[in-house]
Image 1: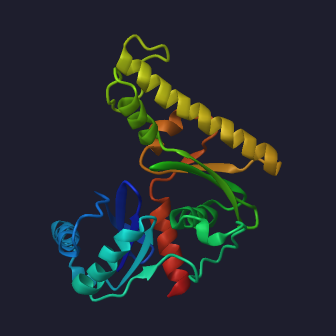
Image 2: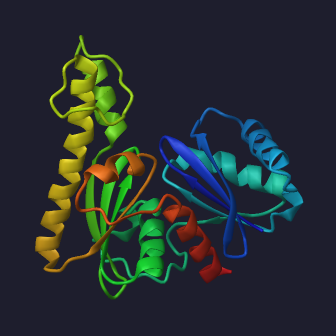
Image 3: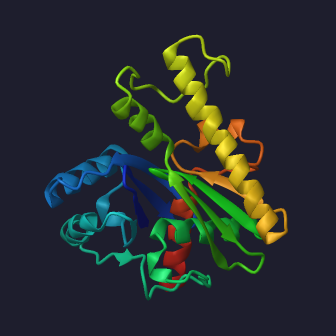
Length: 254
């Protein structure tokens, strides 16, 4: 079995593949203050509860945008699984040309998403990832990573309102009953939800005009299912896009 680990700024997502089939997935908070053993026991217990023996893990691949986490996960893989993990980064075989001024600057998660999206859906594609940051990545019809946009994430914007505006509360990101809010909470929810939907549609439209085509738009990330129904430009929501990309990259390098 293959263990894939995607480390984001807010959450760390783990997936367990049996061949090409995703049989389990888990979402944890990314905590750089945890020790190797704290994370090790946490992951070990996840497998114990799912009735999967850690001995069944034969390979591990990691995508990480939080460098200190690698100092935890690499020793963890060796100590608890006796495996040296494959780390997504410079020098790894992706099978996708990267047309960025400095390819080393592209977040590993963005490349992983792009590879999975092109492999699954073909053609030219825009991937919108609703993570800590909201990213837009364009993949050409030839399967080339061309670049994209980075915006503050939904939760970052919501937290900024809470911290910087003295009378505004912390809110849950849910769909309000109306766009015109009748109280502070629903007004904030409308502004965040519909505002981000408008941001997505606006940026997608600008990308389409720039590339002079009509790419398929794939949404992924923790808040994709909440924002996507309100954005007219999104065609597909694929929660497991990053995990699938990690599986594909491992296969290309094994």
